[in-house]
Structure formats: C-alpha cells, structure tokens
Image: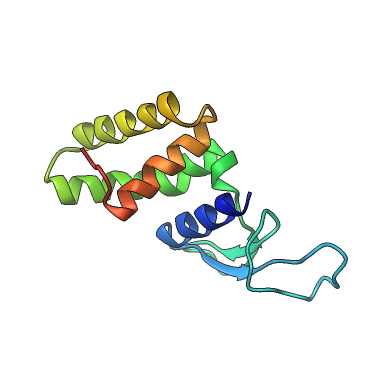
Length: 123
C-alpha cells in the first residue's frame, strides 16, 4: 500500500497538484502531516481551495482527467509525433502493464505513466 502512496504522490506532482498533507485518523481536523494517503488534501491546478487528493491508482476517471493529457503532451514532445501516435504509444504501454503485471486498470495506467515520467521504455 505504501508503494501506491508514493506512486500517488509522484503522479500528483507530475499533474501539478500541490499536496498539502493529510489528516490522520484520531487526530484533530487541523493536524496536517507531510505524509500522503487516501485522505490527503491538495490544491489542483487553476483552483485556489484545497480539497481531497484523488487516489490515482484506484480512480481511472482522475487518471484520464489529470494525467493522460499531460502524458500525451510529453510523448508528443519527446517523440515528435501526432496525438494519435502518442495515444497509441500510451495505450500500448497501458496494455502491457495490464497483461503482464497488474489486473487493475487504473493502477496499470498509473504504472505506464510512471514509466513515462521516469523515461523507461517509452516505445
């Protein structure tokens, strides 16, 4: 589970989401800690109020809203290709993660995007 927390933090940073901290169970509502978990608070791009941080490894909708457009832009810039080709590259990596490693769709997509961020096996 802590691996997913670190993955979630990394993906949030990639998306430009500023993670503020978390409220831990049993702590007063005002206690914020530097660790991130599913109840973390964050400020999203073009927003001024903090709200609950999405959990990318379990939320395909959040992945497609916040991560996929940035991943496509990154692929297009690095590969000097069209968006169609970039989507095909990302889709191929996603399917490889689904097929070889992870049966959960959102987590597999997150792992494919993490590899893109880390520049591992883009093509």
